[in-house]
Length: 44
Image (cartoon, rainbow, N blue to C red; front, side, top):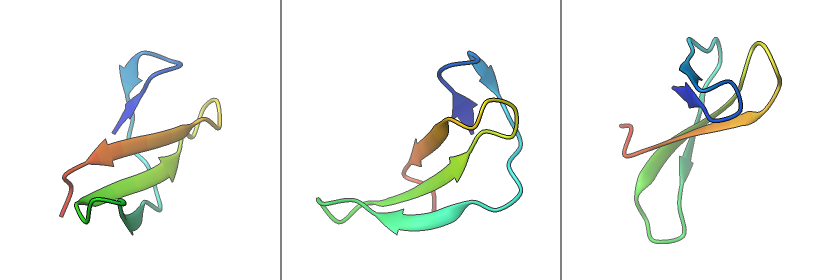
């Protein structure tokens, strides 16, 4: 997943599967370094 604050790709330990308002799947997790919420759209 990509952290916007750190501007780098990071590996996360416990991503959470979520569904957006339009019904598409996504992944949500916290950045291990800065704690910012990271989001990846379209992850199955």
